[in-house]
Length: 179
Image 1 (cartoon, rainbow, N blue to C red):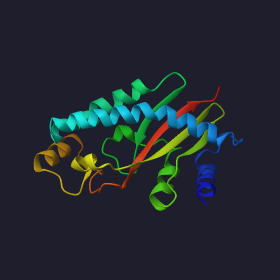
Image 2: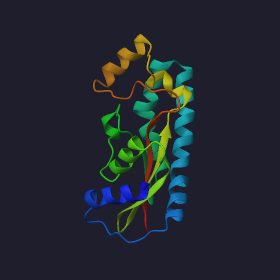
Image 3: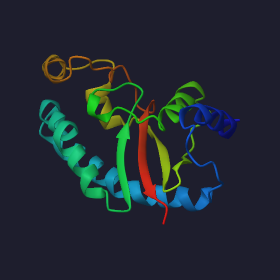
């Protein structure tokens, strides 16, 4: 059902893409490998940032996370993260990612990594992000007043609060070159 719904959505989202078959297992493995350094380095940076306090940790997501995504990317792939509930508008999902976000939000029992042919030269990979306990500090239901004030200052349209540990938060993604 998940594959059918995503495929149906992509027919409308990506009408010009080549819809040939891809080796899903191969591309899922390549995608997971591509995002792993970004995930690992982001978590380490967040742990270090939170050790200095939640307000200081905001800089990790605001400044350090984009740098880590860029550093983890290469000439053959690009990695990042996005969500259906954004804090930073610079992380807005690309059109090929939106059907996956919709699927993950609307079907909690169908949240597996997935791949899609974006165009004849590029495969997209997505992997769900579930909120870790340390993330509740800045994304939880109850935020410290100084943290809330700083988030409001930096992100006046913040939608990324009200979560509990284990909640679906968004996706890690990769765009992989098909050579």
